[in-house]
Length: 118
Image 1 (cartoon, one colour):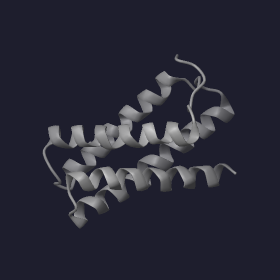
Image 2: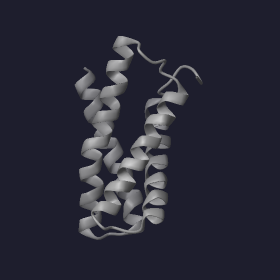
Image 3: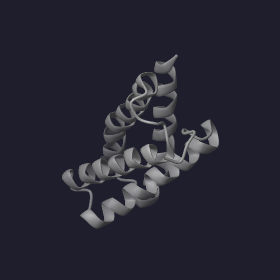
Image 4: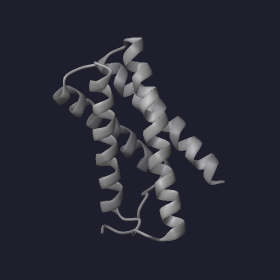
């Protein structure tokens, strides 16, 4: 069941992030970069959260989710800069906007992914 949830989250994230990214650029290279980086960051984050929930190492809190989201934003922005999509500042802002939209959409669709603030 966890595998299906991770796949659904990935498909949902890709759909939202591609729509938001298309407002920035409809160039194929950029949209492929969005897909590729999400194929790495989204499953990694969701697998971390899944195994953390099983092991109970960290509290599944808003703080943990926001720290992980911040890491994803930085990783994706770095990837976009690495593939020469744009400047560091623009890619950081773009990555933040893209991920904020998919995070908000995920909350609307799946509910809050945490039970505590800290």
